[in-house]
Image 1 (cartoon, rainbow, N blue to C red):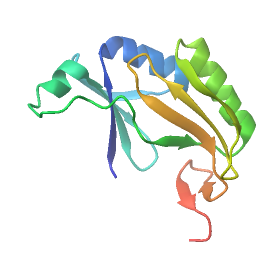
Image 2: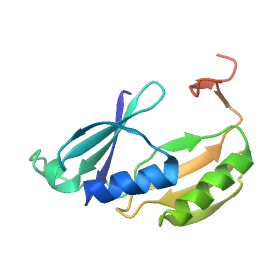
Image 3: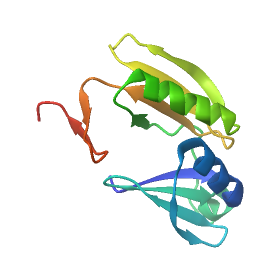
Image 4: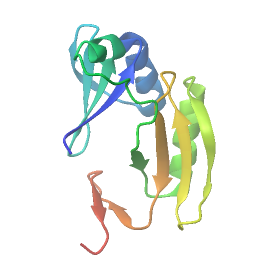
Length: 136
């Protein structure tokens, strides 16, 4: 995977939100259509829904984006969830210990994208911020 895209209705508002909620640093922007953030090993994009629809595909952009942002300890998740809420995002599910042994919560951005914030003991977050499977 090289790129994860989040459809948004207002690119400028989305950039402002994600900078406040997650500390994202926009590295490249093309007008009011799309903005890119360099992550560790991949790129995240905030893509204007109208620009997305101009692709001419016969589907609605997803309301659920099935990915997670993982952390090393539960207090980190709690901190980001609080920062998210302070920035105006919805906390869809408060973080807590979950049945699969991790610690997880869900947040929703103002454009409907649902993102899991979690600690998963099967994953190792390196000092550089990359995610690896433990024991691989």
